[in-house]
Image (cartoon, rainbow, N blue to C red):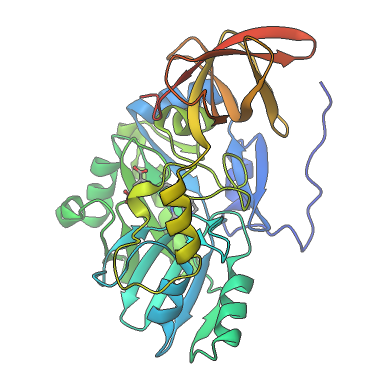
Length: 369
Ligand code: THG
């Protein structure tokens, strides 16, 4: 095994929590929105088990906000997404595919409506801010666009509800999924949403007051022993099993929302004005020729860099594997793959060549669990 680390520099930003997670034993990072995003604290199998039963605190500051405010902010936000936001409410989060003029995906953020004229786009790993600024300039929109100093701490896992109640009181448990509100911690108000990049339940604290956020981060560990709290991060195994998609890994700007199973977030029959709408209508009427699907692979180990071709039993290219991991639950490797017609249906079989060895695989629907 080679042993190297990411050389840090101004281009690869630390977060306010970096020194803390380094003391707590972070063992791998990825870079996301030009910022460090922890990827492992030791074994990801053990972290996955722990996340499913307990509660973890995640430094997900790399989920950056693009703030759009001003009289035309609603128009600009709608122009970027194919999800109709005309009935959106203040205090709610919306999972929204962002689409370009070709009908292809640009990002898949969570959008928070803070006020009629103030929005946060909580982005995945692509430079949405330049896309937004370009559209605003081209359309002469009256808006202000910038990246505010907001660093998210996620509290994830089944015991997150009791831990959060211990810090913020009973009312935090009344937050509905993808709702947000403001909660007091030692005299400082924090925006907290019931959301997060796991299917184990939890919250996200959008920290604007860094000093208070650091104190809160430490406090979770001080009072969380009874819930077996541990530091963690988005977990590759849990998110693949749950079918939570990752921009840049499972899909990117070469893919459209129908290919990625985002159909329920594509509203083509309303008056909403957005980029790529006519293209998406055409794609929908013609039907897609490939789809993101799950695959079960008959091996116990995989290390993916880039994507790998999947072959059909009679030697045709069936698709490509975009993410994969060993799942202790299925006791084999599972992955997310873009599968071409006529192979995109559950129980189609194929094979994969890894380092000269051939492994059998089977297509399945997402999510796995
Ligand atoms: N939280 C916040 N910002 C983020 C993420 C996050 N930005 C980057 C990345 N994650 C964006 N991608 C996703 C993908 C899935 C979900 C959230 C963000 C998600 N999906 C739910 C599901 O699929 O069940 C619910 C979607 C829905 O409303 O139906 O939670 O995690 N702040």
